Length: 577
Image (cartoon, rainbow, N blue to C red; front, top):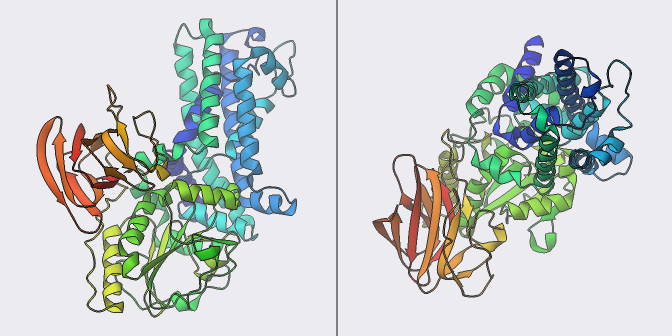
């Protein structure tokens, strides 16, 4: 068991350097270097004491984060339910704490009032570290690392109210591991500010700038604006995470930690868990204990029995999981491409954190992420347990007779999964003529890529350079004088629809990107002229069902592509490889 605890600690370190912690880094840096004056540096007798006080502040912040994160993971949902409180209360409280600190930094007089409950000034030096510790408590409720097998096992234990000694130690180990790189970042930030000679002479200005940064990050976290940043940054720790957490020993031990005691024997034959081949795994378990159904007729329930005759993907996901966000474009593309040929997708949203239990949050996030297939809100983990699921994301591929034929846990292998879908569709409907494969690129490469770029207005278009978009009617647009990196702009006449834009007169799109390859889902009938860096490269003939077309293919580059579309061309979605 000691080895499992060590794995949990190292897994936490990996999570602490992964793209998933990017949204909280500015908060940690601001709080540890320019936080409220909970230490009265004027009362300290020398630089050494000031340095020690700042170090204590950093340790207090990270300590609060560890405690809050651990308690939230293991007990947050259960405690809130017992007290009949909203499931996103802890997250809201964390945001409120950060907001108060930001206001205290911007307005020193108010900051002193906020600090008063936590500060104690004596003759020799100030204070306790309760203020920074409370700040860390608020931050811990917002800290959402990548959901690897260790964190998944811990979360499932907490959600099913089976917390014991092993799960508590695992949680502490994981949290301590994640704290190591965060503490190093906080201390490094302090050292930098100490070495800048002018920093102390401009401490008030620095504090106000820190307050503005902190307030901005509160808004980013409140409205989930960081999702795009996290998905745009490649998963550079994926291989390391897999080698540490997904080896045979770790998987066996973690399965014992989160086991419900009711492992469905029907799926015991699917031993690989990699989804590389069709297997005979047994009948698909039923959807159990669903809190609410979304995107179904009348929001009514679906059953495995009623879905017989269709090929079904049961996709376990949760909306704040960065791993899930990277896999969703593939699931969405499969649903869009093959639904008419007999494919059904059921997204089982099983929450990882307390705020993900809130159904309205799931509805909003599903809309933001473009999920339009049926979703089962599995707040009580009943369907998760029925499938003995082990992580987010996980895909269970069910044939037309209702039997599970493939289980794939984790990211990747999308081309293989799509080939298995196509095989089962052909087996269910002999003679069917399937459209071409989706070809959506894998979103987990090592290179830094421009994130997937939707063009329909229902996706809120966070990276469009035009001032505004008029929905559902022809409108004239102009290119801006300059195009920011990873943005696109419309020129000429376009009609913006929920999922696409349809070309009118002199229609053009300009896109700034970083990638090896650039793809665009196109529909309608006509031509698309492609120019890279102002030089024409190809003309694409568009016809038939909407599908993915290759615009640019080659070496990695940072560039701009300009597209000229004939009237009637529909452009849906840029993806990158």
